[in-house]
Image (cartoon, rainbow, N blue to C red; front, side, top):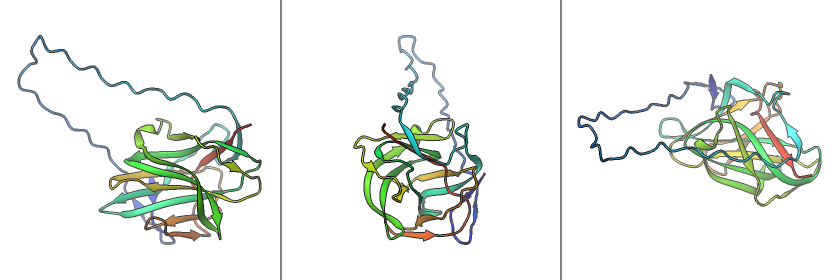
Length: 209
């Protein structure tokens, strides 16, 4: 899998490896000691039904898993955020967003207005979203709590930024050949628009109806 982090000169970043450690126990546990039960991850309820007003997933809700944009904040690679713009096809309160995400650490996700071709006033933010919220299929579904109004024909941004100093996430490309430009930041809040380049990250925006 290729992860792109620099524009316009694009570098390939090696795939991130998750390492697990093991601890050797020399003494057997006492018969009276009860073994701790493994933690069971609670299943999130499905998002409420609504209408997709922007969707760059394919008809099977899939995306390109071979290449991705980096969202990171590490001592080796530095800070990088990624933002994709969209124009909703219909008006209504935001219901949920769905992003093609994998990785480690935590991220901040913001739906924002457009300001002179860059992310502007935040409409809703999902802060410190842990990578444990990403499902095994590579989707991150975030259900709106404030339901800001989206207006058909207006331009908005979906921004993803690292939320801690150990974030290394991938926002996977769409497989629909959509390459409409994007914004990146090398310092928080310092967005730059890139009008040309590879395909945009895959995501969906859904409103209440």
